[in-house]
Length: 332
Image (cartoon, rainbow, N blue to C red; front, top):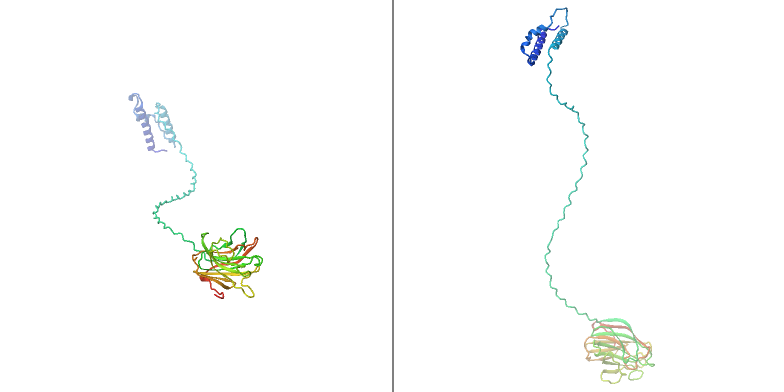
Protein backbone atom coordinates (compact mmCIF):
# COMPACT_ATOMS: atom_id res chain seq x y z
CA UNK A 1 0.00 0.00 0.00
CA UNK A 2 1.19 3.36 -0.89
CA UNK A 3 1.93 5.98 1.74
CA UNK A 4 -0.10 9.19 2.21
CA UNK A 5 2.79 11.06 0.55
CA UNK A 6 2.12 9.25 -2.68
CA UNK A 7 -1.53 10.09 -2.51
CA UNK A 8 -0.75 13.72 -1.89
CA UNK A 9 1.55 13.75 -4.84
CA UNK A 10 -1.09 12.20 -7.02
CA UNK A 11 -3.70 14.76 -5.97
CA UNK A 12 -1.22 17.50 -6.61
CA UNK A 13 -0.50 16.12 -10.05
CA UNK A 14 -4.22 16.05 -10.91
CA UNK A 15 -4.70 19.55 -9.61
CA UNK A 16 -1.87 20.80 -11.69
CA UNK A 17 -3.32 19.12 -14.74
CA UNK A 18 -6.73 20.66 -14.22
CA UNK A 19 -5.19 24.06 -13.54
CA UNK A 20 -3.37 23.83 -16.74
CA UNK A 21 -6.54 22.90 -18.54
CA UNK A 22 -8.42 25.80 -16.98
CA UNK A 23 -5.74 28.23 -18.02
CA UNK A 24 -5.83 27.10 -21.54
CA UNK A 25 -9.59 26.87 -21.83
CA UNK A 26 -11.35 29.81 -23.47
CA UNK A 27 -14.42 29.43 -21.20
CA UNK A 28 -15.21 31.62 -18.27
CA UNK A 29 -13.41 30.68 -15.05
CA UNK A 30 -16.54 30.86 -13.10
CA UNK A 31 -17.82 27.78 -14.74
CA UNK A 32 -15.09 25.69 -13.06
CA UNK A 33 -15.29 24.90 -9.38
CA UNK A 34 -12.38 25.01 -7.03
CA UNK A 35 -9.80 22.72 -8.33
CA UNK A 36 -9.08 21.15 -5.01
CA UNK A 37 -12.73 20.60 -4.23
CA UNK A 38 -13.24 19.17 -7.63
CA UNK A 39 -10.36 16.85 -7.24
CA UNK A 40 -11.60 15.77 -3.86
CA UNK A 41 -15.07 15.28 -5.12
CA UNK A 42 -13.90 13.20 -7.95
CA UNK A 43 -11.87 11.01 -5.78
CA UNK A 44 -13.86 8.03 -4.78
CA UNK A 45 -14.53 7.40 -1.17
CA UNK A 46 -11.98 5.04 0.00
CA UNK A 47 -13.42 2.29 2.07
CA UNK A 48 -10.76 0.57 3.97
CA UNK A 49 -10.60 -2.93 2.92
CA UNK A 50 -8.41 -5.56 3.78
CA UNK A 51 -5.30 -5.00 1.72
CA UNK A 52 -6.95 -3.03 -1.08
CA UNK A 53 -5.00 -2.60 -4.33
CA UNK A 54 -4.31 1.07 -3.95
CA UNK A 55 -2.32 1.34 -7.09
CA UNK A 56 -5.07 -0.10 -9.25
CA UNK A 57 -7.68 2.16 -7.64
CA UNK A 58 -5.59 5.29 -8.08
CA UNK A 59 -4.84 4.41 -11.62
CA UNK A 60 -8.52 3.75 -12.34
CA UNK A 61 -9.53 7.05 -10.78
CA UNK A 62 -6.91 8.95 -12.70
CA UNK A 63 -8.04 7.35 -15.87
CA UNK A 64 -11.66 8.27 -15.22
CA UNK A 65 -10.76 11.82 -14.32
CA UNK A 66 -8.61 12.22 -17.37
CA UNK A 67 -11.39 10.82 -19.51
CA UNK A 68 -13.89 13.37 -18.07
CA UNK A 69 -11.63 16.32 -18.84
CA UNK A 70 -12.25 18.25 -22.04
CA UNK A 71 -10.01 17.30 -24.89
CA UNK A 72 -7.33 19.91 -25.43
CA UNK A 73 -5.71 19.58 -28.79
CA UNK A 74 -2.02 19.23 -28.29
CA UNK A 75 0.27 21.80 -29.74
CA UNK A 76 2.05 20.45 -32.68
CA UNK A 77 5.68 20.16 -31.96
CA UNK A 78 8.09 20.81 -34.71
CA UNK A 79 9.03 17.66 -36.35
CA UNK A 80 12.68 17.31 -36.09
CA UNK A 81 14.31 16.17 -39.24
CA UNK A 82 15.45 12.65 -38.86
CA UNK A 83 19.11 12.59 -38.14
CA UNK A 84 21.03 10.15 -40.25
CA UNK A 85 22.42 7.32 -38.34
CA UNK A 86 26.08 7.72 -38.47
CA UNK A 87 27.64 4.84 -40.07
CA UNK A 88 31.22 4.04 -39.60
CA UNK A 89 33.08 4.82 -42.75
CA UNK A 90 35.14 1.98 -44.00
CA UNK A 91 38.73 2.42 -43.21
CA UNK A 92 40.42 2.92 -46.55
CA UNK A 93 43.18 0.52 -47.28
CA UNK A 94 46.52 2.30 -47.24
CA UNK A 95 47.67 3.06 -50.75
CA UNK A 96 51.19 1.79 -51.17
CA UNK A 97 53.57 4.61 -51.80
CA UNK A 98 55.59 4.23 -54.96
CA UNK A 99 59.24 3.57 -54.46
CA UNK A 100 61.17 6.79 -54.68
CA UNK A 101 62.66 7.27 -58.12
CA UNK A 102 66.32 8.14 -58.06
CA UNK A 103 66.73 11.56 -59.48
CA UNK A 104 69.85 11.56 -61.65
CA UNK A 105 72.39 14.08 -60.63
CA UNK A 106 72.52 16.88 -63.15
CA UNK A 107 75.43 16.56 -65.57
CA UNK A 108 77.73 19.47 -64.97
CA UNK A 109 78.03 21.65 -68.01
CA UNK A 110 81.53 21.74 -69.37
CA UNK A 111 83.41 24.83 -68.57
CA UNK A 112 84.79 26.30 -71.75
CA UNK A 113 87.83 28.36 -71.13
CA UNK A 114 88.72 30.55 -74.03
CA UNK A 115 92.42 31.18 -74.00
CA UNK A 116 93.61 33.90 -76.24
CA UNK A 117 96.97 32.75 -77.55
CA UNK A 118 99.78 35.15 -77.14
CA UNK A 119 100.99 36.04 -80.60
CA UNK A 120 104.38 34.55 -81.22
CA UNK A 121 106.81 36.77 -82.92
CA UNK A 122 107.80 35.02 -86.09
CA UNK A 123 111.53 35.17 -86.41
CA UNK A 124 112.82 36.47 -89.63
CA UNK A 125 114.21 33.54 -91.50
CA UNK A 126 117.85 33.94 -92.24
CA UNK A 127 118.52 32.63 -95.69
CA UNK A 128 120.80 29.64 -95.47
CA UNK A 129 123.39 29.70 -98.16
CA UNK A 130 123.24 26.68 -100.38
CA UNK A 131 126.36 24.70 -99.67
CA UNK A 132 128.46 23.96 -102.68
CA UNK A 133 128.76 20.28 -103.46
CA UNK A 134 131.94 18.71 -102.21
CA UNK A 135 134.08 17.83 -105.20
CA UNK A 136 134.46 14.12 -105.80
CA UNK A 137 138.12 13.26 -105.65
CA UNK A 138 138.11 9.49 -105.97
CA UNK A 139 136.70 6.83 -108.26
CA UNK A 140 136.65 3.05 -108.70
CA UNK A 141 137.98 0.55 -109.01
CA UNK A 142 135.78 -0.18 -112.03
CA UNK A 143 136.02 -2.28 -115.21
CA UNK A 144 135.27 -0.45 -118.46
CA UNK A 145 134.78 -1.63 -122.06
CA UNK A 146 135.68 0.80 -124.87
CA UNK A 147 134.18 -0.32 -128.19
CA UNK A 148 136.16 0.68 -131.30
CA UNK A 149 134.55 2.95 -133.87
CA UNK A 150 137.15 3.59 -136.57
CA UNK A 151 134.90 5.73 -138.74
CA UNK A 152 134.00 8.53 -136.29
CA UNK A 153 137.29 10.45 -136.60
CA UNK A 154 137.84 10.68 -132.81
CA UNK A 155 138.91 8.55 -129.89
CA UNK A 156 136.60 6.52 -127.60
CA UNK A 157 136.74 7.45 -123.90
CA UNK A 158 135.09 7.13 -120.49
CA UNK A 159 135.07 9.96 -117.91
CA UNK A 160 134.91 9.35 -114.14
CA UNK A 161 133.14 12.56 -113.11
CA UNK A 162 135.69 13.46 -110.44
CA UNK A 163 137.20 16.93 -109.96
CA UNK A 164 140.81 16.63 -108.90
CA UNK A 165 144.14 18.33 -109.67
CA UNK A 166 146.67 16.11 -107.86
CA UNK A 167 145.94 12.40 -108.18
CA UNK A 168 147.22 8.92 -108.78
CA UNK A 169 145.44 7.14 -111.64
CA UNK A 170 145.85 3.41 -112.26
CA UNK A 171 144.34 1.11 -114.91
CA UNK A 172 145.10 -2.20 -116.58
CA UNK A 173 144.59 -2.19 -120.38
CA UNK A 174 143.88 -5.47 -122.20
CA UNK A 175 145.28 -5.56 -125.77
CA UNK A 176 142.32 -5.89 -128.19
CA UNK A 177 144.44 -7.83 -130.73
CA UNK A 178 148.09 -8.53 -131.56
CA UNK A 179 150.11 -5.43 -132.41
CA UNK A 180 151.74 -7.25 -135.38
CA UNK A 181 148.27 -7.70 -136.95
CA UNK A 182 147.03 -4.15 -136.32
CA UNK A 183 148.38 -1.29 -134.19
CA UNK A 184 146.39 -0.16 -131.16
CA UNK A 185 146.62 2.82 -128.80
CA UNK A 186 145.29 3.82 -125.38
CA UNK A 187 145.99 6.34 -122.68
CA UNK A 188 144.92 8.43 -119.65
CA UNK A 189 143.69 12.04 -119.68
CA UNK A 190 144.01 14.25 -116.57
CA UNK A 191 142.68 17.68 -115.57
CA UNK A 192 140.00 17.55 -118.24
CA UNK A 193 138.09 20.89 -118.18
CA UNK A 194 134.30 21.16 -118.11
CA UNK A 195 134.50 23.14 -121.33
CA UNK A 196 134.48 20.53 -124.09
CA UNK A 197 136.63 22.84 -126.17
CA UNK A 198 139.29 23.14 -123.46
CA UNK A 199 142.58 21.36 -123.42
CA UNK A 200 143.63 18.50 -121.12
CA UNK A 201 146.91 16.74 -120.46
CA UNK A 202 147.23 13.20 -121.83
CA UNK A 203 149.69 10.30 -121.45
CA UNK A 204 149.23 8.23 -124.65
CA UNK A 205 150.83 4.96 -125.75
CA UNK A 206 151.13 3.64 -129.32
CA UNK A 207 151.78 -0.09 -129.81
CA UNK A 208 153.99 0.46 -132.88
CA UNK A 209 155.59 3.90 -132.72
CA UNK A 210 158.50 5.46 -134.42
CA UNK A 211 160.43 2.23 -134.68
CA UNK A 212 158.51 -0.77 -136.08
CA UNK A 213 157.69 -3.26 -133.35
CA UNK A 214 158.63 -0.85 -130.56
CA UNK A 215 155.91 0.90 -128.52
CA UNK A 216 156.13 4.64 -128.05
CA UNK A 217 154.47 7.12 -125.73
CA UNK A 218 154.04 10.89 -125.63
CA UNK A 219 152.65 13.61 -123.38
CA UNK A 220 150.08 15.73 -125.16
CA UNK A 221 148.02 18.83 -124.33
CA UNK A 222 144.92 18.29 -126.41
CA UNK A 223 141.14 18.20 -126.28
CA UNK A 224 139.61 14.94 -125.10
CA UNK A 225 137.56 14.48 -128.25
CA UNK A 226 140.44 15.16 -130.63
CA UNK A 227 141.92 12.40 -132.70
CA UNK A 228 145.69 12.59 -133.23
CA UNK A 229 147.73 11.80 -136.31
CA UNK A 230 150.17 8.89 -136.05
CA UNK A 231 152.72 9.29 -133.31
CA UNK A 232 155.84 11.21 -134.25
CA UNK A 233 154.04 13.60 -136.56
CA UNK A 234 154.81 17.18 -135.63
CA UNK A 235 151.49 19.03 -135.42
CA UNK A 236 152.65 21.81 -133.10
CA UNK A 237 150.48 20.93 -130.07
CA UNK A 238 152.47 18.14 -128.50
CA UNK A 239 154.69 18.11 -125.52
CA UNK A 240 157.99 16.26 -125.26
CA UNK A 241 157.95 12.87 -127.06
CA UNK A 242 160.19 9.95 -126.20
CA UNK A 243 160.49 6.43 -127.53
CA UNK A 244 160.40 3.53 -125.13
CA UNK A 245 163.71 1.75 -124.93
CA UNK A 246 163.73 -1.72 -126.45
CA UNK A 247 164.49 -4.60 -124.09
CA UNK A 248 166.90 -7.24 -125.30
CA UNK A 249 164.67 -10.27 -124.58
CA UNK A 250 161.18 -9.13 -123.68
CA UNK A 251 159.84 -5.76 -124.78
CA UNK A 252 158.71 -3.50 -121.93
CA UNK A 253 155.41 -3.00 -123.72
CA UNK A 254 153.38 -6.19 -123.95
CA UNK A 255 152.00 -6.38 -127.46
CA UNK A 256 150.22 -9.74 -127.79
CA UNK A 257 146.44 -10.12 -128.03
CA UNK A 258 144.84 -10.28 -124.60
CA UNK A 259 148.01 -9.31 -122.78
CA UNK A 260 147.69 -6.68 -120.06
CA UNK A 261 149.73 -3.53 -119.63
CA UNK A 262 149.50 -1.81 -116.25
CA UNK A 263 149.57 1.98 -116.53
CA UNK A 264 149.95 4.50 -113.72
CA UNK A 265 149.98 8.30 -113.94
CA UNK A 266 151.04 10.42 -110.96
CA UNK A 267 150.49 14.16 -111.09
CA UNK A 268 151.28 16.68 -108.33
CA UNK A 269 151.35 20.38 -109.05
CA UNK A 270 153.19 20.91 -112.33
CA UNK A 271 155.04 17.61 -112.35
CA UNK A 272 153.85 14.34 -113.93
CA UNK A 273 155.33 10.85 -114.24
CA UNK A 274 154.28 7.83 -116.35
CA UNK A 275 154.71 4.28 -115.04
CA UNK A 276 154.28 1.26 -117.35
CA UNK A 277 154.37 -2.24 -115.91
CA UNK A 278 155.89 -0.91 -112.66
CA UNK A 279 158.69 1.09 -114.33
CA UNK A 280 158.86 4.85 -114.63
CA UNK A 281 159.35 5.46 -118.32
CA UNK A 282 159.03 9.23 -118.52
CA UNK A 283 158.32 12.51 -116.75
CA UNK A 284 156.90 15.84 -117.81
CA UNK A 285 157.64 19.15 -116.14
CA UNK A 286 156.46 21.80 -116.01
CA UNK A 287 152.80 21.13 -116.81
CA UNK A 288 150.97 24.27 -117.81
CA UNK A 289 147.48 22.84 -117.18
CA UNK A 290 147.18 23.17 -113.40
CA UNK A 291 143.49 23.41 -112.52
CA UNK A 292 141.34 20.60 -111.15
CA UNK A 293 139.47 18.57 -113.70
CA UNK A 294 138.04 15.24 -114.70
CA UNK A 295 139.95 12.03 -115.40
CA UNK A 296 139.30 9.75 -118.40
CA UNK A 297 140.61 6.61 -120.10
CA UNK A 298 140.64 6.36 -123.91
CA UNK A 299 141.38 4.07 -126.85
CA UNK A 300 141.94 4.87 -130.54
CA UNK A 301 143.81 8.05 -129.68
CA UNK A 302 145.73 7.92 -132.97
CA UNK A 303 144.62 7.42 -136.54
CA UNK A 304 144.42 3.87 -137.79
CA UNK A 305 144.63 2.32 -134.28
CA UNK A 306 141.04 1.01 -134.13
CA UNK A 307 139.54 -2.05 -135.71
CA UNK A 308 135.83 -2.58 -136.39
CA UNK A 309 134.20 -4.91 -133.87
CA UNK A 310 137.12 -4.78 -131.45
CA UNK A 311 136.85 -3.79 -127.75
CA UNK A 312 139.57 -2.46 -125.47
CA UNK A 313 138.93 -3.57 -121.89
CA UNK A 314 140.07 -1.42 -118.96
CA UNK A 315 140.27 -3.25 -115.63
CA UNK A 316 140.38 -1.78 -112.12
CA UNK A 317 140.20 1.82 -113.28
CA UNK A 318 140.90 3.85 -110.09
CA UNK A 319 141.42 7.51 -109.16
CA UNK A 320 142.86 8.44 -105.73
CA UNK A 321 144.05 11.73 -104.25
CA UNK A 322 147.82 12.08 -104.58
CA UNK A 323 148.45 12.64 -100.83
CA UNK A 324 146.86 9.26 -100.01
CA UNK A 325 149.20 7.33 -102.29
CA UNK A 326 152.44 5.78 -101.15
CA UNK A 327 154.48 4.69 -104.12
CA UNK A 328 156.45 1.49 -104.15
CA UNK A 329 157.28 1.69 -107.82
CA UNK A 330 160.97 1.01 -108.54
CA UNK A 331 162.86 3.76 -110.19
CA UNK A 332 160.87 6.58 -108.58
